[in-house]
Each structure stands twice: as C-alpha cells, then as structure tokens.
Length: 177
Image (cartoon, rainbow, N blue to C red; front, side, top):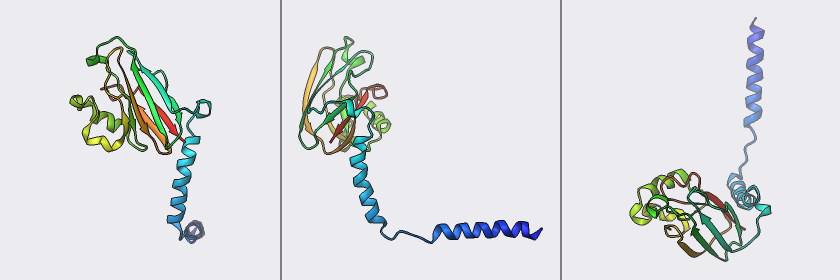
C-alpha cells in the first residue's frame, strides 16, 4: 500500500526537478529580440493584408448605417500619409456625426471609446487621451469631408469613429510597413 503513495510522489519530484533546472540567463536579450520580431510579424499576420494595395493616399467614407466603406489600409511607414474622410450619410451631425481617429498600437479601444463619449465639447476627442492618438479628423456632418496628413512608424494601427456608440462597428486597421 505504501508503494502506491511513494511511486507517484517520486514521479512528481522527478518531473519538478527536471523542469526547473535549466534557466535562461539571457532573458532580456531574448525579450528584446522577440519584440523586434513581433513588430515585423504583426504586419504579416493581419488577415487580408496581402490583397491590399500599398498607398499613402487614403480615402474613406462613413455612412448612416455606422459603417466605413473600407476597413484595411496599407501604407509606407515613415512617409507622409494623406487621408480623406467623407460623411456620405444624410442624418444630422448631432445624431450621426463621424470622425476617424487613428489610435497608437496597444491602445484599448473600449477604454478609449468610453472616454470619448464624455468629450462632446472637443468633438469626441478626449483631451486626457491625446497620447493615445496618432492622428484624427474633425467630426463631420452629412456631405462634409476632412483631409489630414500624418506619418506613421512601422506597426499596426486601429482606426475608429469616436462618436458615442460608433467605435464598436466603425473600425479598421492601417498597416504601416
């Protein structure tokens, strides 16, 4: 009976000893290499990016169904990008305004969207989160358009409409390579 308890205990001890004895002392170097690889592979893992033409002149429309007509762009990193947003809807700006906010990589969309909801006085661009934004257009009413210029570093950027309730459906990605 004692053997039944001793054998599993010995097996457990051996497996724990085998797992813990080979620590990697160059963890920081490996972590830095992994971060560099993450940035280069992140652009390669965006579904459908291989079918998107590389262009630094972007045009996008927002409509009354809370949709952007394009959800994926590919740009050359480090070079100026020109983006034109047009609101093709007919509903009033107060109920269906659209903007386009390009968020820096790693920004939590839901948190940003929540902060934007209480920023009506600044066209739903929260002043407390300006460091989270790479670029943004103004808030547009029906038939209006806005053109902006900006430059992105290599990476994957999410863009959203920050008008209350829109960011859940009106979002996409810009891959800067």
